[in-house]
Image 1 (cartoon, rainbow, N blue to C red):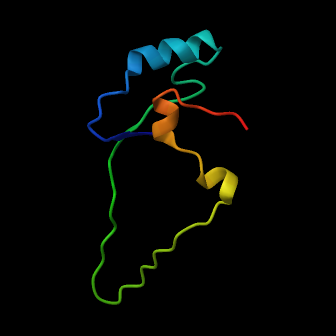
Image 2 (image 1 turned 120 degrees about the horizontal axis):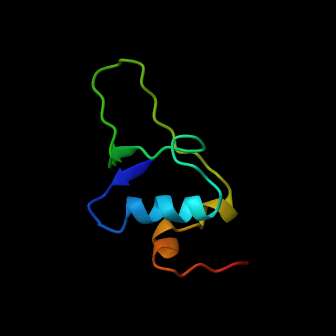
Length: 76
C-alpha cells in the first residue's frame, strides 16, 4: 500500500520496473494499492472503539521511512 501524502516521491512505473528486475511480477507476486493518508482516528460516544499504541521494540521503532527515502540508511 502507498499512502497519498502529497510528497510526490513515489514513481509507480519506476517501482514496477525495479521489482521486475528483481524477479517479481506485477499482479502475480504483488499489487500496488493507493490509500489515503490517514493520520487521525476519531470517534464519538461509547461505541466500543479502542485505540492503542503498539510497542514494536527499540530496533524497529527507530526505523525512519523519511531517512530511507532520503537515502540516509545506516546499517547497524
